[in-house]
Amino acid sequence: MTPDIAIIGAGLGGLTLARVLHVHGIPATVYEAEASPDARSQGGMLDIHEDTGQAALAAAGLTEEFRALVLDGRQAIRVLDRDARVLLDRSDDGTGGRPEAQRGELRQMLLDALPEGTVRWGHKVGGVRALGDGRHELTFVDGSGAAAATVVAGLLVGADGAWSKVRPLLSGAVPEYCGMSFVETYLYDADTRHPAAARAVGGGSMFAIEPGQAQLGAHREKGGTLHTYVMLSRPREWFDGVNGPGGAAGVGVGVGFGFGDAGAAVARIAAEFEGWAPELTALITDSDTAPVLRPLHALPTGHRWERVPGVTLVGDAAHLTIPNGEGANLAMLDGAELALALAAHPGDVEAALAGYEREMFPRAARSATEGERFGELLQSEDAPRRLLAILGETEEPA
Image (tube, rainbow, N blue to C red; front, side, top):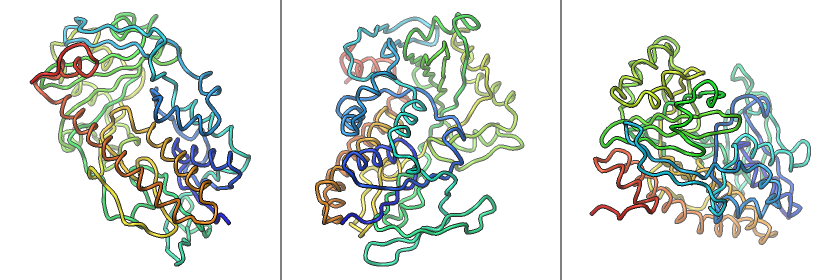
C-alpha cells in the first residue's frame, strides 16, 4: 500500500513527480506556498533536453503537449565580442535535441494534466517534525507566520528549491554564494522598439563575452521579447552597494528581488560594460522593466545523504548548482524517476527511495561539476574560445 504522499513545491520537479504518479494510479498532494499559479512570473525560456527533460515528459505522457509549446527557431545561437562582432552565428535547422519553451507554459501544462485539487495553493511550510516509522508532520503557516494547518505524510518529498524546508531532515548542507550573480532585464516588442538590440541577439540565444570581464546572455522569447541575463562575477557586498532602500539579500537562484534604486543600479551595472557596442549595452540601459538581481548559490558538489525513512528530495532541493542549462531538466527527471521507482515497488517505499537516490546522486554530481566548469569558463581570460570549443566551433584550448 502506498502511503499518503506530500510533495512540497509546485515547480517543474514536484509537478512532474505528481503527474507521473498520477499516470500510474498513485495519488499525491502538492503543497505550494504561493497563493495561485499566477502569483509571480515563472521566468524565461528553457531548453528541454532529450535524455533528461524530454524523457521525463515522455514518462508523464505529455510529449505531444510539450511539442505544441516549442518555439521554432529558438535553438539558434550567436556568440559576439564586446564590439558586437559575430564570432559564431548558428541557425536553428530543426534537428537540435534541445527545443526551447517558456517555463511558465511548461508549468501550466503540468498543472493542467493533474486532477483538480492535487495542488494546495497558499500552503507555506512553517515546520516539519519526524514522527517515526517514516511519517512526518507538516505545519503550514499563514501570512502572519501563525500555524494554520497540519498534515501527516507517510512519504515526504522536498521539491522546494534552494532554501528547502525539507532538506534539514536529511542534510545539514546550506547553499553558499558562488561569487556570481545574474541581473535580469527585458526589452519588449524589440524588433520595433529596440531594433539594433534585436538584430544583435538574433533569433535564439546570444552570448557576448569579453575575457575577464562581465558577460551578457540573452534569449529571444515570445512576442519579440528579449530577456537578458547580465552575468557579474562580484562579491555580494558589491550588489549591496547598489541596493539602496528596499534592497534585500540572501535569496537563492530562482528567486529574485528588485534593487532599491533601479536607476542607480542600472547605471552602475552598465558602467561595467563601458566601451561595449551600444546595441549590447542597450539590453541593460533600455530595459522596459526594473532590473532583478538573482545571486547564484550552490550546494557542495556531490551533495548526498544517508537514507532516512519516508523522506527524499528532488531538483534544487537536492542538488542546487550554478546554472548550466541542466537544472530544470534534472528536476523533471528526478520527479519522473522517483515516481517510476515508487510505481515499481508498490509495497516497499524504502526500496524505491534507495533506488532513486542511488541513481540520482552520481547524475547530480556530474551536473554540478559541469556547472562549476561553466562558471570558471565565464570568468576565464580565454572565455570566448572556450565557449566556442563547447559549441564545437574550435578546439579546446590547452
